[in-house]
Image (tube, rainbow, N blue to C red; front, top):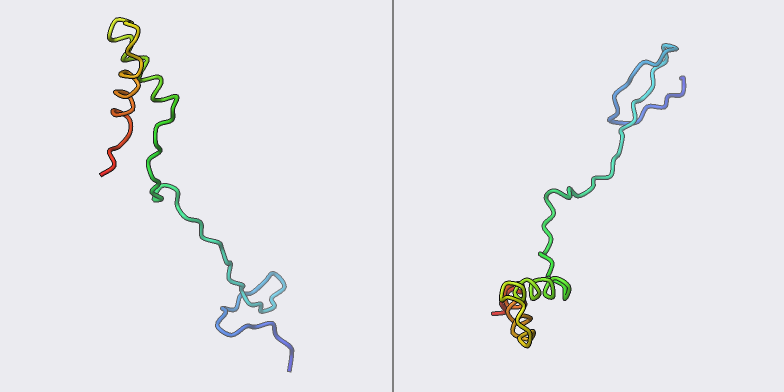
Length: 83
């Protein structure tokens, strides 16, 4: 009896020499889709808060001496409330 390379459950195919061979299943690694992945929103950085505070400073006409007010207002606008 001739030796075969058949594996149970695998379909037989004919190669170019007319011999019967067994098709091998391809295995692939499934990667998670980045379009479906949900990420937590990023918090503003100190740079973001400073930039918004500067915008508030300019909107007020550049009046000095209220930098803490501008910073706290900017921080309150950009950071989510902790409740």
